[in-house]
Image 1 (cartoon, rainbow, N blue to C red):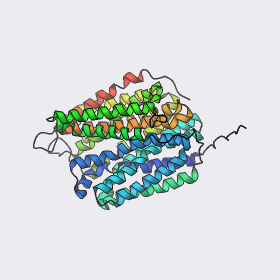
Image 2: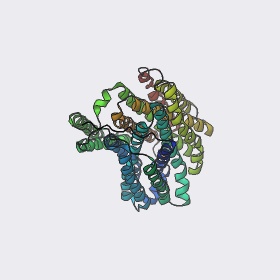
Image 3: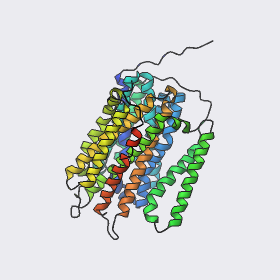
Length: 465
């Protein structure tokens, strides 16, 4: 006897709006540490190495949980997994808000890292309940709101921490996440599981990927200080290679791999991953260097801006990032992903090289950062929508998870490289990097981003409907 499943219910704009609110709240919670890291270092008496660990632990956790979340969403249903995942995030936000010391705060950040898995689960829900054309726009809206929420968190974290306390800068967005999760639970209908679920989680693959990412971040962070210790540097490289090789071997043989590397054999997936990585490296360099340049003393070559002033200067970038997601989704629908990505890459390369050449006025940095934020949103949204709509419906979560993991890793790598460039460019006995270090960072980011045009040439032309 054959059982025919009813088609999934088509949703209105209200459930999509609830997903958008959740994206804003999680984006804000994700971003509060970066602008307040100096404050946290002072209050919790952290060293610079401990501060660096705090700044990347959420990204690492997110990169690990995202493919698992997408895979489980494809198998069990996106809504079911999303609600449970957000319960973990809310617990992490509460732990971070109440944390009396660094170890407890690190635990809270580890739990909060589960929020990165919310995006592919949202894409599963949107694609299951909307036609392809509307799904592209909705994915763009949700992606853009997540980016916009992140920028809002960056802007508000400093004033909240200074005006109230560091505890409230975690508590307020956590309250918003709880409220948005309740709305999604009530308004979003359940989606159908897409796969059988007899296989379990690939714990060996998860552990080896954890070792790979942690070793990579450690290598990038410590490389400038280990130039005089080549044996230590070489040992870390060997460990990294060992973890990466073992993880690849395990994933290829696993009956149910955490990350289905066979998906990378598909041109639409590996091209999206390569482009996303390169573009996010370029973006993250600007995200790290521009605030640092604002903060450099006016007696040197900077502007001596306060945390509140820096937040104000970054506001145009926040607006541009929020608009980039919907624009990217509309552009991909009407013109095709290739056209959107090429336009975004050209804008980003131009802005990065312009910042390398001219950065003597505040408006130079404001405008440059705004165009970089816009370009990043256009490119990443086009990559995600292209991937989500060019694979089988049962593979949507797995494929978009690969792209989003690449985004997280690219961003983390870019930040660590930027920090290494500034560290290497700081004269002995000084706390201020040489101006040439910023020029080098912007120029290298522009050159690396320009390489992505080699990949865009092979993308399919035309609008995708």
